[in-house]
Length: 342
Ligand code: KG4
Ligand code: ZN
Image (cartoon, rainbow, N blue to C red; front, side, top):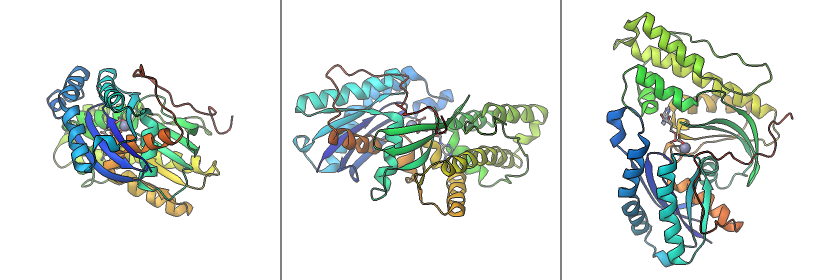
């Protein structure tokens, strides 16, 4: 039995959650920062300032809603990287101070590992063994999860992350930040085969991704025919772009799954909230006859419940942080091998 407070501030969400035994969410507060909307993207300095203003009230509310007292907590977990360094430091310092004041362990969490634990939190009865596509604003990685802390990198993006491509194309289409959800919504009304954008061709055996070509193709298409941005055409343009990205993500995940003996597929990270991507993975998994583990959208985008769930695993393994634990803008996941075929 454990009660873990999770804190997440790696980008522009201030979030806190209390999770029991890594599977029961007692409370979950997510405050998305609105201030970046007028700038069309996250302004790091403003993000850290907002976190400073909001993180303590967010933690207090999570504790109130959980209906427990601080003394009941067994540990406090926070994201230590990768992410925006100023934002990370705010959550990390807050969580570390709580842990220190309460005399309980501080549990340092890797952001991508937290996305993987969202899968465990959503599907606690399934083995923690699957091929996962982690797809977010900063990462696009195919990871073979062979157990707790046992990860192999199967494929990754060579340029932009998928979420970044969604956000940039949204900006070209004049949609408000954050772009991904806006594209998802408009694309639902469009014809995905109207403008066939060609997919990047990498080496035959590679499970890597490349999205800069698709993004540039959208830019040139708009430059050559501004009419693509008319109210009538925009949904078709966005649906076509989305279709191209979703197709590559699904196809590489299918090929990765076939090379693995884990027997399960998972989808996580902010872009996993995308309606079309979820549907495409469901179709693909059904075709392969394989169980698909996908957290609900609220556990796909950045949140503290997944941090607390990862914290439970760190607590059980006594992976406690030193008092001077720092934050890291770049922090690779410790992979066992570079490639499944290596
Ligand atoms: O995991 P996340 O919340 O933050 C990072 O770790 O980056 O992912 C954020 C990314 C953004 O690029 C956002 O546009 C994208 O996830 N995203 C979506 C959707 N919801 C969030 N992309 C497409 N469709 C969505 N529904
Ligand atoms: Zn994330």
